[in-house]
Image (tube, rainbow, N blue to C red; front, top):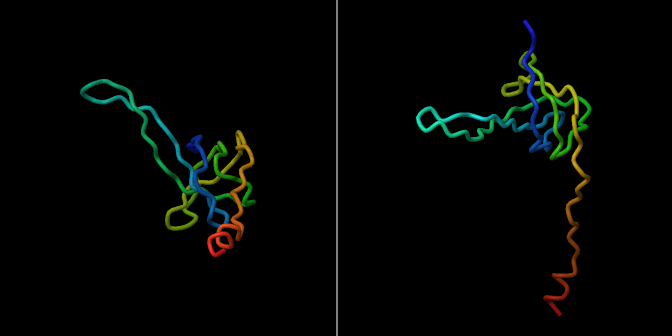
Amino acid sequence: MPKVSKVGMVTSNKMDKTVVVAVERLVRHHLYKRAFKKTSTFMAHDEENRCRIGDHVRIVESHPLSKRKRWRVTEVIRSSPVYEEPVETGTKKASAEG
């Protein structure tokens, strides 16, 4: 039986060797027949800690790795642009006192 694979976007990488992947799918409403997106989140094992927030990755089913981790990252399809959080400086505090 082939393993199920899904493609999604990394939404969190704050854990060690674990990423949270959001997978979107198109669902049709049973009564009104309008299509809308549903998002499911999966925790996936990332052995090298190479995934960053915004990366598009392929995940594949695996045996249970922890309580909520049942997926592994097999490849990074598209990397996100490098984003660095702004570093706070002490200038605000110093100017407020003086």
